[in-house]
Length: 330
Image 1 (cartoon, rainbow, N blue to C red):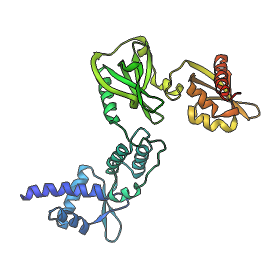
Image 2 (cartoon, one colour; image 1 turned 135 degrees about the vertical axis):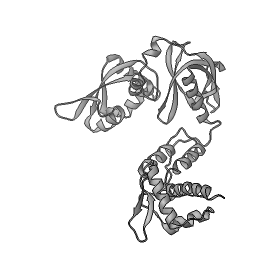
Image 3 (cartoon, rainbow, N blue to C red; image 1 turned 180 degrees about the vertical axis):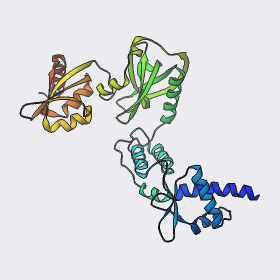
Image 4 (spheres, rainbow, N blue to C red; image 1 turned 120 degrees about the horizontal axis):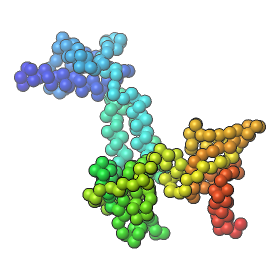
């Protein structure tokens, strides 16, 4: 191997060793660096390594000396801090959308962002209730395909499925293809949804990606109309429950003070709330989309919440409760 070529490789290997094995709390001594390079078949000596470290510093790497005996060298500033990597790992492991296999593969990739010592702190698992034991296809492929369709401004076609009483997958519309204008992908409650305009229904609908099959980019240009132009994804996310479509209304709900944590968790700290004079209740005013999912969420608050306005929403909730009670002979 030519001397100049060996020197170039030495610097690259040194950079990789520092990135992989050191962090602000853990470094390597000069003899350890020489040993690591020797294991890769590269001869190194102290003076040369001092020059190489200085070259990497000039390149922009924050290599510092840890004041220990003997002195250690470490990459102090990394692309991600350990707390950030932990957050990424937890987010991946807690996603119900991902199968165990997909989750483990992603976590393995994310862990490569940490040093060898930091990875020991990442050897933990977040238990996910309800994660599927297996998936018949790669949902990453579906997401990538839908993203490509959005970028190409092309319509997509797909079959949409539900589960029958025997847990079999049953195609909706008797197996006919849905052809829609894809608008965006939304992640909600552990699932990906395709937000799309359906020309056959003349409205925007939400489709769960894991219930879509035979997805294809048609090449037909997307629709353009006022319904699509006026769609606000942020507003839709604030008002919808479980991505369920429904009529948008502004609801006034009286809630007990000890339930405000639940309300703030759902609607955010900037939710409009007027406390009563005695501080025992508050009237919350929020835009929502009327749906069984909203009624279900409200029911979890029990007698601590009451819809005040509009009357149609109040009556709709009462009718929903009556239908449930009727099944129990009440």
